[in-house]
Length: 107
Image (cartoon, rainbow, N blue to C red):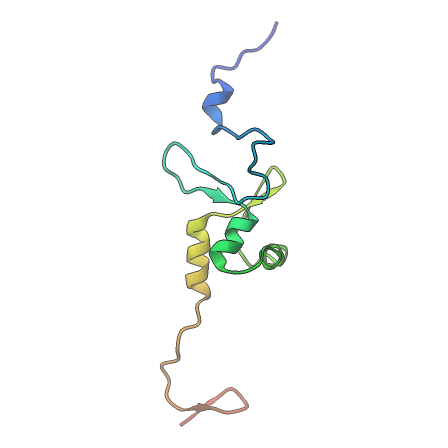
């Protein structure tokens, strides 16, 4: 007796490009039919951040950047990367005065 699944495999996952289609080494993004944001690879994330792929790899290793690990591959959400960049922004101080060596504001 064999068990049958009610859902087909093609319904469960988005289509995957076959290996050897000439897209190796290029940043690839996958989208879902529902219009969800695409997940991008390390090279595309580095391009979005304006940094090297090696730096992105280090940020992942140090767990300083939001990422997903899917099937042993590291992927990034562009919307989460944008939110992370905005969160990491250093805003100008609203305090007036100079900072002493002890870190206190004088003035």
